Image (tube, rainbow over all chains, first blue to last red; front, side, top):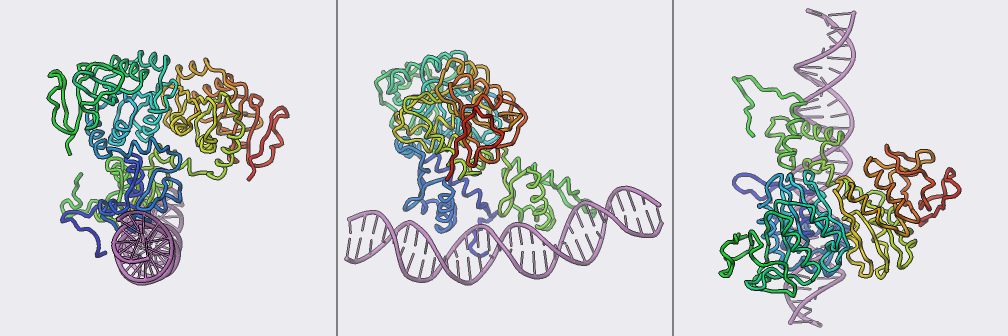
Length: 261
Length: 261
DNA sequence: CACGATACTGAAGGACATTGCATGAACCTG
DNA sequence: CAGGTTCATGCAATGTCCTTCAGTATCGTG
């Protein structure tokens, strides 16, 4: 073949199936696919991408739209839209977060699209125990054969799709984890860690008590922002991961990790 | 990994078994195999590699794809592939099952792809409470704004992606539902309802005790089939939904519903 | 040791899959 | 409604697959 991409050393022949799997993965993480961009990125013609999308659509794995594809029907707009926001930031934070998990650790994963990105970034052969009260996260952990998943039940709060309630809190109370990835909607020098739902705030504060270390992955829009309900003061956090520089107002006892490009 | 092919002018003839083992090792490490590249590397014809891959695929050790092979992924594929199996049957059973839910009822939904199809068939404005120990089902219920979702936690059984264990059983013990949709892998005149996992069988039998009525949606391949572990005798079921006619051996006290086209 | 049976490999040929390109239709934007 | 973009289809080139066959090595048995 004369069109192949010779890169001095080796030709990375991507199998068709691999490419399709990649497309679906990408769709799950980013919530949308753009045909033209993918063609450039994967070094194939747009026709090939379009063909893939058409075939995946025929299998019902995604919905074809002009210019690319969107998740298959069952996905709800709010969630799909949320995951389409700040995609790049979330992918990078997720990758950085995934690196922090050591083999064998017991990790509590809070809900949220950023943590979804973290799951997508986990190495396939990771050996760990992951505790979560988010059915979405739990479902996404299916492919990881060496991960033990502990699902915490309760009443689902529709907005954020996590379990809440007395039973949930009690179940977390019986767990001592090594690591907690905590989802918040605000990180502020005075207000501390905040979120938009009172019960959720309470549960999240309990999560902090159930783990030795707490890590917050914060997209840029959350830094310096506040939401109505406080989870805990900043000092409760072990490390804050952001895309940019360390905010000047961070307490000195708090580690800051960059998730640069 | 590097190895020399020629040692002292003597050619290192690799035994077939050795080569196959190497292929599997390589697949485990790299996650993919490309037939053409392996042929060059191992100094055999592509046909030989292809033969190996074909045979390994027949043994279920890997998945053959155009150009090479991918992991058999006893986890990833099953779910994706299982949901692709018997699609038409599942959709019809799911639709029929969805019709059986009355507004305001408390419904226990077991895991499984058939029940996933049921969720897809639910009316958007359904008002009900759905209890489930399957994160996949729970996640799929996100779009239904008037459905209260109760998630039951536990340790996830990867194969079927449902929560199991003492906590799960106990949580179900505290629930009295109107309706239970029970997933089984066999419906047999003598063996009754059966499934392939002992703990799952035990939990399922507990589910039956937690609901006033039990409904089994059975695809054709399950009728007359048995799996190793019994859940309960046929008489425990309120209604059996199938695509075809009522099996002659069904106990007379048991309702049969057709999910015809 | 001889002999047939079996297993393994490579090669030929035809079927099949995948890809990029060309064409004209459908779509979106302003 | 004009102009660009995106799309589906048919086509040709190439790569991959399977089947079949023949040659060689290995094994088991007499």
